[in-house]
Length: 80
Image (cartoon, rainbow, N blue to C red; front, side, top):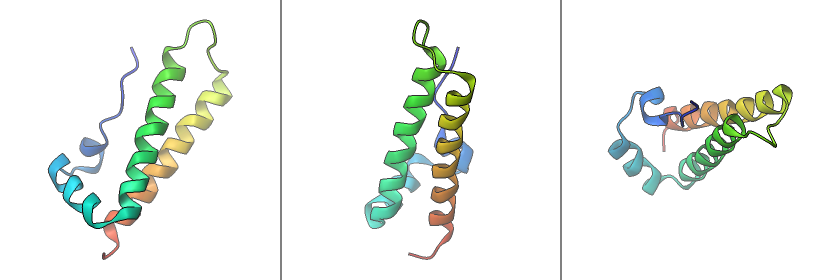
């Protein structure tokens, strides 16, 4: 059964720490919102039955999610 990715666990950072950084960094906040939306789209595609996307479409959704995650990592590393 598909489940949402735990971004905080993947980044090895607490939810509270991310929340603090989000309030100070609008770009980070925007990226995290994009990640959450991308993750929802992947989970929806993985659980679709009658209107399931092709494997290529699902792969593209996952790649988009990964790109956003990479941007989040870069933003967390950059000095604010």
